[in-house]
Length: 492
Image (tube, rainbow, N blue to C red; front, top):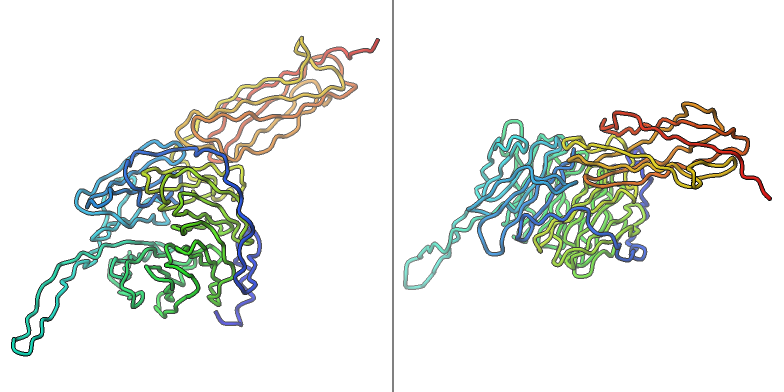
């Protein structure tokens, strides 16, 4: 980026604050200890090593793929990430679907093996197939002084598609191959626009990513360097810094590029200078995947040691670390508001972690769309009353709201509103906090502090409690809290 426009960078930084751009590569702060929480959902329907698992960018649908080691077949499942319920799926009995990515519309997805298939996921329909010319004949020349040149056919090798990504506007799609080539197509006229060679290292492309503004296309392969092209002019630069092969990359909303490596670190690169601005020591044995939250404020990593971690992108601080997999993590993925994190692994499981208590993303605009409906219900109880069920003037207690979600989907940003009906202001109920997320089948006890004023008259005080949810899954009928105030307790 030219120096004359550097001042405008601040306007496009994530709402979480200004990312520290001091040059250098300081390591992250000390790691958080393993979080004792268990995963909210354990999905074991694959039963074989999971290749990738991705949340839809619009709702809690997960698309995941698996393949048994050494076998040319794979299975895909479409399922509800908040409950684990399977809603669809398909199998490939001939090839391994190594690559997969959602379009930003949350409806289409691309899956790659020998060709790239764009699928309408809700309709379970193949929309288009992009041929990738993934085979080539490998030949050797036998040159002998006394014999003619003989051209031997050694093998015909399929260079599978190994990584795929949509541009932010879904107008373009890029896919990497096992031979180090990257192909770019137009989604509008389905034309092949470019075939790019990542580097002289002819290893498989491990990951592909467009920047969130669509100006850059980056890939990584079995190499320490990261090729980045301008888009669509394809002017190329190489980023160097890792001590091991780069395994995964992702762009943040503010323009930052994260790269994960077998050297156990994640590097954050500033896209105007392409310098490393932070180096995070993440996992022993290597980092296998990295992904930003939708707002770019936080990132998650998966490790070859089976652990998953969450980091603050601005400071590099480790926020949480989860241990639940028995083998290397193959992929990590946030849902749209970063209340759920999915991790797939070689042990055949996809684990979904509830992050709602971490408060990573409070933007209501990123609330997952209600593809899977929630169904809320609640009961009201009193805490702190005397044996006869009443409260004395000057006493305190609580109204307890027992919330339950019996629906298929998660409930988000649940607001509890309390308003007095009868009895005046002598009994006060405080407004409770927002319940960020309530998963299917889960309960939550909401405490509403209650204070009885010293001058409260004996009698009955009525309060109406309304429960509202961000996607409209409200409790339809208001609940009632009835507080009885007795005579004041007199001393001897």
